[in-house]
Length: 395
Image (tube, rainbow, N blue to C red; front, side, top):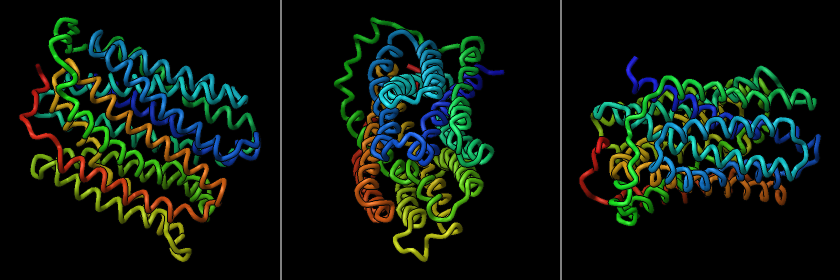
C-alpha cells in the first residue's frame, strides 16, 4: 500500500478519535448536571477547555513538528489525548475534570497540527485537496461515532454507564502503533532550513486563516456544542438524537470529499461562499426561532443541511497549506486552526452562561445572531486572502 494512504488513514483515524473525545462530554451534560449537580457554566467550560488546550498544543507542538518531524508529534498527540480521556472517565472531582480536559486539549492540538500536515505532505500534488478533505472528514466520522455510541448506550442514568461511555474515548490508543510501524515521513527535519524562513513573512496568512477558522468554529460550535441537549428538550429520544447526529456527520464527511472534488471545476473561494449561504439557512432550521417549527423533522433536516454546507471547511486549511513553505507549515496551519478552536470554546462557555441566566428558550435567537456575525467574518477573511503564488507542497 502506498505510503500516502497509510499517512492519510492514520491521520484520519487520529483526528476522528480527537473529535470523538472532544464532543463525548456534550452527551453527558444532563447526567452530570443531575448526578453531580454541576452547573451548565462549568459543563460548557469542560468543553471549552478542550478547545483552549488545543491552541496551546498547536503553538508548542507545531513548532516542534516543524523542527523534529510530524510523525513523532502525531504519535505523542494521539497517545496523550487518549490517556487523558481514560483518566477523565474515572474522575468525578470537578477541579480534576477541568485540569484533565485542558491537558487533553493540549495533546489534541498536537495531533491535528502534525497529523494533517503529515498526510498532506505524503500526498501526490494532484491529490492534495482530496487527501486534506479525507483527513478532515475524520471530524465527521468521530462526531458520528459519538452519536452511534450514545444511541447504543442510551440515556445515561448510572455512574457506571457514564464511565463506560467516557471510557470508549481510550480507543484511539490503537492508532499509535499503526503510525509507528506503517507510516513513513517524507518531511526531513532541518534546523538550518527552519532558520532561513522567517515566520513573520507569513503573518498575513496566519491572521486571515485564524479569522476564518475563528468564524467557522464559532458558527459550528454555537450549533453543535449545545444541539444534543437542545434537541432532547424538544422531543428527540436518545435513539432519535444518536441516529440524527450519526447521519448528519456522515453527510458532513461525504461533503468534505465532495467539496474537494468540486475544486477541479469550481474555485474554492466560490465554494466557500456557497457554503456560507447554506449554513445561514440551516442554522435557522436547526434551532428554529418560532415554536411550531421546533419539530423532529424540521430540526433534523436543519442539522443535516448544516453538516452538508460546512463541507467547505477543509478548503480553508488547504489554502493555508498551499500558501506557506514546509518550514513553517505545521506552525501556521495548526495555530490558525486551533486559535479558531479557542473562540469556539469561548462561545461554548458563553452559551452555558446564557442557559444559566435565561434558560434554553432564548438560545435560537442568540445562536442565529452569532451565525450571521461568523459568516461575515469568514467571508471578509477569504475575500481579502493574500494574493501570491502558492508555495508547492514539496519544497
